[in-house]
Amino acid sequence: MSTSTELPLHCPTCGEACGFGEHLSSVRSCQKLCLTTRRSSEGGLMSLYAQRENEINRPLQLELLDALSLARPLRKILIQRDSPSSRPPVLAVAVSSRAAEAEADTGHTVAQLGVPWLGRLALEARLQQLALEVQERVSLKLEALQDEVKRRSTEVRRARRESERMHREKQQAEERAAELERQVDISVEMLASLRYELRERDEQLQRSLGWTAVSACVVWSRLDLHWRGNRSSESAVCSERLRLKAALFCVFTYLDTRSLLTAAEVCKDWCSVARHPAVWIRVTLENTRVSSKFLMTLSQWCSQTQSLVLHNLKPRSRGKKESKDEYLRSTRGGLEVGLEAVLKAAGRSLISLSVSHCPNILTDRSLWLVSCHCRALQSLTFRSASDPAGQEVIWALGAGCRNITTLHIAPLQPCLQPGRFSNRCLQTIGRCWPNLCRAGVGGASCGAQGLASLARNCVNLCELELHHMNEVNQEAAAEICRDGLQQLHTLSFISTPVTARALLHFSSACVSLKCVLVQLSISDYFEDADNEEAKRLFEEIINNLQALRKCPALSDVLQIRVKKP
Picture 1: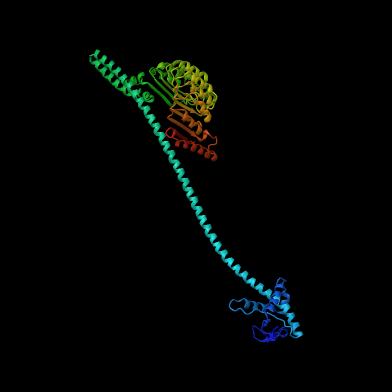
Picture 2: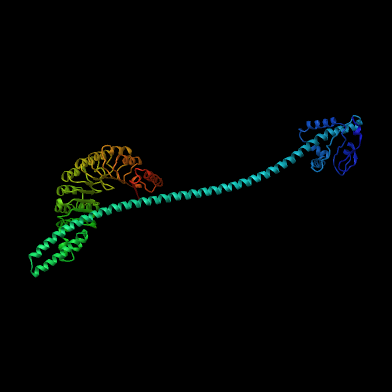
């Protein structure tokens, strides 16, 4: 062993020489415990470190350190030891076997008490410093990550708002496109209907011009014969009046019924022309109150009437003391006597008859009167909500009027007798008029079976209107088209729900189909038209039907009209 352990010990702070006992016994101003020695060999130092490693896991007893007044000096020693600028040599204590017994015992005791705790405190201080550094770095990194998260969150919110804005703009653009497409469809349909109406007006005008030319020729021939037979001045005056009447006749043939009744009150000459049967070819009474007596008076001038239209006629006003039931009983069928007089006067000259929206005052008995007096009838329209046509009336009408080619007798809705017009009526129509070309039927009691019978018997049917029927699906369409409708070119669904597959089947089965009209409202599907869910489902149904317009077979054929409630 080296004798370096015999050298005096010096304090690392003040530089004074001191021993273990002297240092522990005396109270110095520095209050530090410094155990400095020269290393005699590496083995002694390693034994000291091994002892310190064995004692490092022992619990820290601060009471002992306080008793020895070692807490504050040791903390300063550790700070100086761990400082990066100045790194003093490792403190070591070596006990030499050559020292005195008392000094050896004292040094050994202090080394056993002090050196392990010094290592423990140094390690804990180092660990605390590392923990502080790690905590500082972690806090800095955490702050940076938090700033990054905030920045990313702001970007995500901005991107979400931008996405929502673009979604709203896209939805608005789609709604606008759908609205424009709907407006275009409505415009196309309006143009088609106007073109069709213009064509009908043109044909009607041509017929009127023909009738006027024939009548004018007859009048001028009579005037010429009369003028040649009477050469006196008095006859010349009469001829001038006849020529004036002939001119009035050419004008009055274009007047409607109300204008003719007004013109008859101007003067005697106008009255004689306005009440001539030749100008009462077309009689139209609509949106007014009439009585049976008025119709009987009108029948005097209807001997040459070819077209009679009665639309939305109203009976007399209800009395103040008259109950509703009494009023309905007294006015029921109130115009049938006058209508019978008009029908009897027109006779076989009447070709077209239309009676609609005249509830209670004109019942289905009117059809019996038609079958008795107008056997040359070709077009009949009878639509009533109170008294729809039944099977017996249709049978009688078929027996009396065999030349009918246009028949529209679908009940109006809401119908007071929904079961009156049924599949049996459709079967009767098919048997009575096999040459029927245009038909308008419907009602909740009509189904695919009756329509199939009608299509099978009426092989020349070219126009078919279905009013307020139950939903027509693909199976019903297949049954209807199985044995008929080969000549059909116009198919209309008026307030009758129809599926997309059914329309596709009609398009494929009816080879001559040129127009398919679907006119619907939300009340045809749902009772509660104000329900948001019902509105959404109805919008989906309309969109599915609109999608069929992209099909090549229905692109120029399908027309969809949506009625707003």
